Image 1 (cartoon, one colour):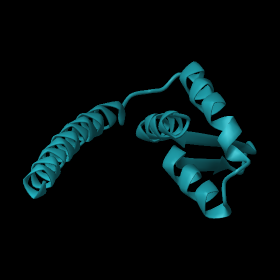
Image 2 (spheres, helix red, strand yellow):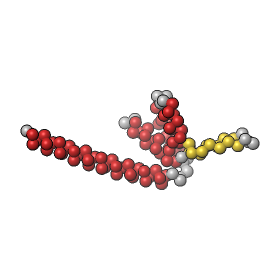
Image 3 (cartoon, rainbow, N blue to C red):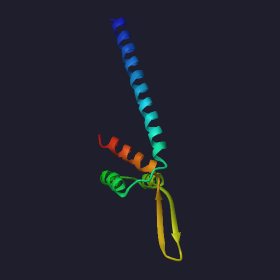
Image 4 (cartoon, rainbow, N blue to C red):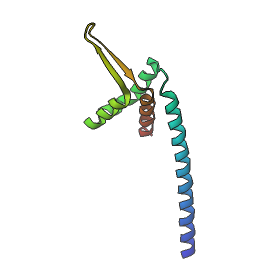
Length: 107
């Protein structure tokens, strides 16, 4: 009986290590994709789509989570005092990261 438990433990450990390896590979692939997307322009539909997925989660967040998300999404805010206009530049990778995290949280 001890041998069976040892074999089960070894098999389970091997399964977990294989699963971790696959997860690490996927994470590496996603990082590469995010880096590629970093310089890309994102259209308004993509932003609206991602943010619509996030709306149900927003009300449940803590203040520090709001700050993290804003820092994740916003690259730069510029105010033109002469015209009174504000322009906001978003991080492409932030949008994709938010979409991934939101999708994962909804599973």
